[in-house]
Structure formats: C-alpha cells, structure tokens
Image (cartoon, rainbow, N blue to C red; front, side, top):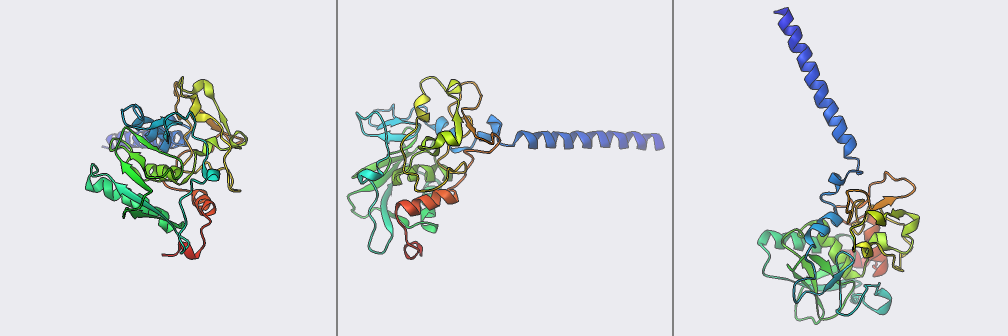
Length: 279
C-alpha cells in the first residue's frame, strides 16, 4: 500500500511539474513576439478581411492596407492641412453624421453603434444619426475594412465587412481614418522608433510601409496606438516586418481600443475644449 502511494505521489508530481512547465513555456511564448499572438491584432484582422478589398466593381480604390482613395490617385497623403476636417459646432463639439446599412444584423449594428459612441466618452467628436445632412459617413459591408482619410464630402464610405471587420478596435481604427488620421508606422519620424524589414514583406505590399509627412501634433510615437500595425503585418515568411527600436521586445500593434495618445491626438487635431467634451 505504501509503495502504491509512493508511486502515485511521484506520478502526481511529474504530471504537476509538466503542467507548470507547459504553462511557463506558453507564458514565455505569449510575450508578444510570436506570430500567434497577433491573431486578433488590428493589422491581422484587416489583412484577413481585405484580401478582396477594392476589387469588387463599385468599390473605391483601396491602398495602404485599408485606405480608400478617389479613383485616379496613387496615394492617400494626409489631407488635414487641405481642409478635410469635420466642422465644429458652436457648442465646441464636432458632429459627424452617419448611416448604417441595413445589411448588418442587430448584434453587428449594436457593436458598430458602441464604437461610434466611444468617441464621445473622451473627445468632442459626436457621431450622430443622419438627418438630411449633405456630408456623412456611410457605413456599409463591402469587400473588406476600409475608409477614406478625413472628410471627403457627400456620402463617404466606411466599409466594415460582416466577414471579419465588425470588431471594436477595427471600428475605431476606420473611424479614426475618417477623422483624418493615418497609420502610426507611416508617420514622419517612424524610423527613429521602428525598423521596417521589407525583405519579409509580401511582394507587392511594400507600399503599406511608406513614410508620409504627417502632422504628429507634438505627440510621441505610440506603439500602443490602435492605428499601429503588428510585428508580423503583411509577412510572407512568418518573420517580423516591423521591429521596435531600441527595445526590440516592446509589444506593438496589440491595441483593442484607442490609446490615451490616440485620444489626445483627436482632441488636439479638433481643438476640443473641456466644455465641449462634457455630456
């Protein structure tokens, strides 16, 4: 009996040690440096959903991952200096009319509305249901997740495909494009903060990593921005395409919602006043 108990004790300890070791290994692997950790990053969700973006007749031209551009243009440069901001009302708030397509389910519609309303919690942006306004955001389920940058006029499309785009972080990401923001890893000073490994990028997708002369609004580079792509964005060989510097182990592109710096930029770009952010 004692021998049996001893054997059972040894077996239990062995199994327990195996479980603990397995847990520690998985914890170590999930430090943010594994491609599996990016399954639900903004860039991975966009890449999966946007395989056919812009290829369906009637869709706008889609470049740089998820930015819609008018036909005939070959880039989507920042437009905020050319007057593409949404206008501010006399009460200090910025009212952006929207319409949600009837193709969305009730659950999907609720998720989208929650994403729209999230801006009012920390900025002076107020997404409001369309009421005969001329310029508005037209939220549709087209061939992927994409948006124009800034106010384009008339009914401008923000596509949130039902197949892979109706997530809180994606909704905020595309709406930030509509408000005038580009991707974090394309900002003018990005080479001081990340290294782009083009040799690991899918052939023909290198343009997703171009630098543009952004207005950084005197804010620091933000690895936690909901506008930042992940370490393995557009990888062709499961090797990193974006490496943070000088600390290569910093997690990037893992945001599930707007970061404090994202919020700060919205408030600075639209000159939100504290009074305008109340209510």
